[in-house]
Image (cartoon, rainbow, N blue to C red; front, top):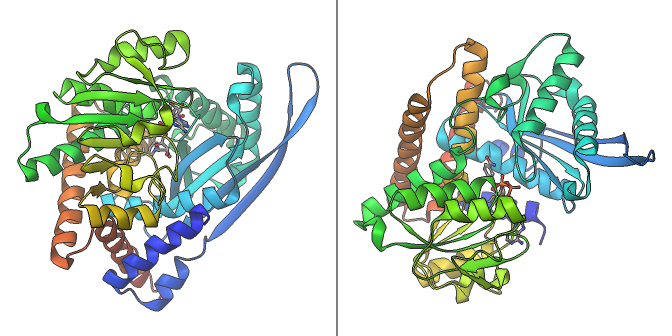
Length: 411
Ligand code: NAD
């Protein structure tokens, strides 16, 4: 089953709860616009290569399209469509005034030099520039795209528009209009959701063990902040390996080890382990923070954790969701748990438009308020309808999107 088909099955389950007007449901089955671009990049050896990229503008009922750009060798249109749909749902769940969009380039950026990466990033953005804009569609980072790449995007757009428009892209470095707290926002937002959930359960962080799959932007910041908060991180993995320590380790030391060696494996404070088994670690919480389709019908019943905190987008396929429900495993869904990234992207966009920048504490406080409210809204919807948190989040989002469409006379 494709990633987009899985996303549409999630929509169907939500529709059974939200009961939207059929015209809204039909509209939400189709992206509003799909852009496929090809562009040429001069490589360091003088050869010229052609790359294919996408930008999917899924829904703009609630505001401009919004969503990251992924550089990955497996990125294709199906994946970008699913990710853009999830962005529309996510922005509605946390109540930021955006619709959903997503972009991607089919490329393994690890095989490019830094100058090739810059030329590719600029060429992709030149190709999509006529279709984006701070009031139209606002890209951001995702897998393998960094603040540096966002700075190249924004600079390329400034050349295209003949003026500076920092609000056309979020996740930029602070030096060119980024927001304090954006780098750690996805991890921090996920931690607020976990805190709220455990507060409801009356659990103390120090008794909670956590395994994290994926040690990039989302996974690293989450692990570091969760450790500071008193949680015990017992396993982490990346695409090359894994390290475990049942007594818990300090993620900051693993971050330093990874930045020195390029991998989490070989960390002296832990034992190397099979990354394919990380989600089956004996612990209380697992945090998929890498890619989609990681929890499937094949491995879901071997999961020992009681809570899945989804920092990645789409890590759990619908069959695994059903198994978790049967086994009493609570899934804190991606459209809520990883929404801290888009929330602080929204704050960055506001600051860019104001031309006035907030301090770190102000951003963190605003993020906390927003994430706690979103958790409370989703929890309330789940309790009222006796459904899972994922069904509740999707139902809430579909209702909010419906309200916007009705207000505009689109239905
Ligand atoms: P990233 O490129 O910074 O990091 C990805 C990490 O996943 C890397 O450590 C990589 O080694 C690891 N990885 C890849 N394949 C793996 C595998 N098979 N097993 C274990 N690890 C693997 O990307 P990111 O920005 O942290 O994004 C990770 C996930 O979080 C994605 O699903 C993304 O869509 C989602 N997300 C990110 C943000 C954000 O603000 N960056 C916001 C919301 C959601």
